[in-house]
Length: 219
Image (cartoon, rainbow, N blue to C red; front, side, top):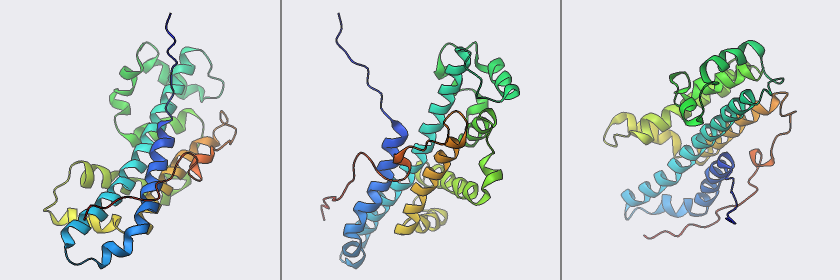
């Protein structure tokens, strides 16, 4: 008889708290990094490393949450627990996904390939306004985050002028804080759905598990 206990890892919480933590930890060393002119290439590389982690983890928090939300819908459809959802949209969802026994097959569907598509589909199914309709500024900020991750961090060309210009946008502390705020606002939007009754988890406001207060530099 196995005594193994299943463990549920809260991915969006982990990623969002990481995104915030790197911003706060970097603040401790900011003045030293900026004033150190003896090896500017290393200090700029360190600054970029912290900045990129804030951007990437903010994006991953959104992606993890949307994958979880779609899994919840898929599970509810299979269990006939669909009273919270838009009838027409859930019928379309059923036609596409009800016969899929593995969620991995669902999430690979071309209609769910792009994160923005997953966001819009979940909005329609859960009877809430699309983010682009409710808060155009937030949606514009999200698309900018998406472009930073895809074109500047995941598929980078560090010798290009575009890379240099995009990097300047993520270096300031203010910009990095805004990325985690974008993720928090995107996820919070979905808690306006009737299924969740407006109960917004605390981790979307502040870190609840951990903080990174110090990072050892090897310069």
